Image (cartoon, rainbow, N blue to C red; front, side, top):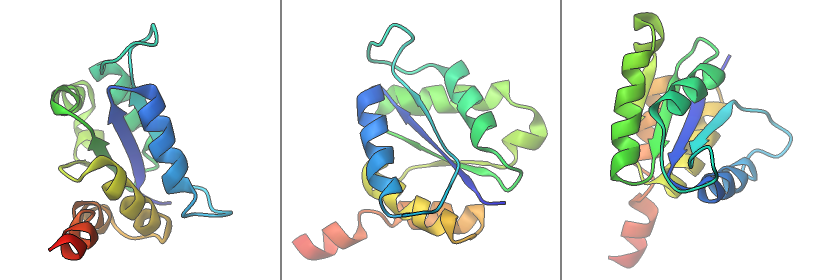
Length: 135
């Protein structure tokens, strides 16, 4: 089993593109990456129930790291935790990582079998290469 990843975004297109980019780092390898993005009618927004469902889809028992884009995506992810059983909630980490950079790092580390804490730590280091290059 591996740690699952959930992408929460206001835009389905943005989330799908970020996941596609990250999956290119895993040629020939599978990883549970679920998306909760946009509204049911195809608009922009987030839905806490959809986030909870995505966490359920991504959780194989080793936990889930959730990456989010903008402000209310964070609120939706926090609300989603309230919908989960205590056991599942205890295996979820909400990450403050930048969405795209964090997702790329997270999927690579998760696919290598690292722990939820290691996956979350790698996601949060996502901006480091860009910061180092520009300083």
